[in-house]
Length: 616
Image (cartoon, rainbow, N blue to C red; front, side, top):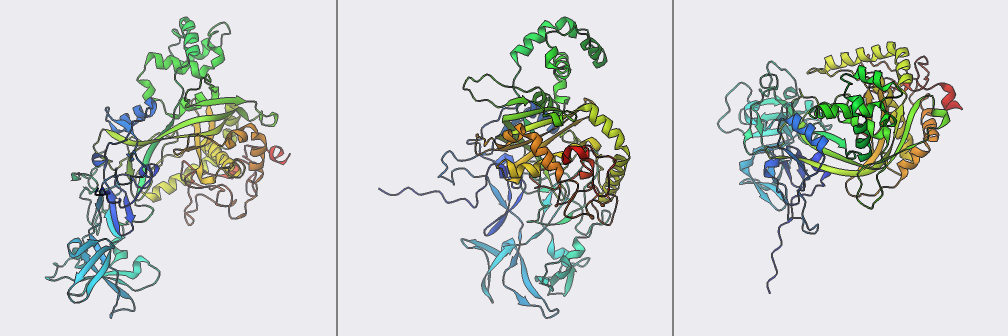
């Protein structure tokens, strides 16, 4: 019996989570002997690409992409884990220029030079790409590490031959070389030379940004990861093509995934629905929030639903009157309400996606905290809607995606990649009266942070992002202080923890959730739940570290408006005190200041927590 022929092994392997972060459609990926771009969703196989059910997140993404028929689907994986070649996501070779690995001495400088050739001059072998030259024999070659791209994500090869000749016509037999005159890899030490006519251009000159006369020309809309391979490079507001910029294909700014996430909340509580119907005679008269607050303040009204709280009852009224308005509600506001109220499903042995249990607020925290909730079970769904290059997309304060942003397309398929993760966490809510009273004391500091932020946005160029507010800085800084402490006490690595900040001044909702969620296991260690039950101990220990930093006085004295430093979104915050792993922070370690939490050696007049709290 003849042995069956095995499928050839794939060029590389990726986890599902990577397909939504650094290796999604349009991402440049280095393989052992090649450089490729991941294909768009149009070319993805559908085997085992199961759909994910999350109505709230799906409605938001459909609204953002203006595609009402789109669904959420997991990236494809083989049914048999041992058969790695059964399911593959297509890839495309990119770039189409190569550099010969063998070096030669450059007679015009003290450096070395390498030959630059096009894709037509090289051949793919099992060991990689090779150049066959009649005079020098077979020599290995590697993909060129420089490409050009625009901020909207379009991607193209650099026309090295025409750039090397500048404004002159390309010579009849161009011989291009990459000359390295230094040892540090600085762009100023790299030069593209045509030895046939002795013309040259420095790589550093190509990296210079001039929007009116870009050296690399304006974007042609190339999308090598999509079947069409090009689209008009135009903004949502009618702007023309953006200038091409030089991009190092394996650099950290070559691909920033744009994702939206949501916690899966429990379905409607039948007991609440029954109580809500009993109070129908009352809420029918509540045409506005002001009228509702007045009616809810009457002890004899809303008797059946009063114990559920005003926010939940009003949300139910709005949903009943205008179901379409649910899409307009920020994803995180219902999350805050569900976490605040707590939800413990009937233990019938079925799979549960959400479970939250309120625990007593410690006496020492009673003046500042309104609620402490442990979350033994949660489900987070993350979906990718696009990507950017050069600069990451910073979501809005409420966690929503900005409808005005320009993201590169993933493809024209009827789905977007998504994953579901399961985990645990703990939630705390600050008392709104205390937060609002503190915000009045911190008005001067908020103004200073807002002005520094505006200055940084003006220097950055492009569309200015609004300042998140001092309430967000408070909650975000508190979250990072807890993340530093929790990573040592809960049994989780710091990089596996996450945060969700809930700052809604209009609704008077101020809270934070620290959680962990992974896709490879549906179990939890229980460490974060235990932290939530002993929050007083961990919060006091976290705040005890904040008055002094190992980088003081430099850290405490940092002025966010100082253009020489360029840290416009930080107050007293550095790697010695508040900065955490990038994967744990939802804002890229921005909007942080430990001076809003406790006294520092530079500030003492607007700390949220008094000295007696963390010193006792």
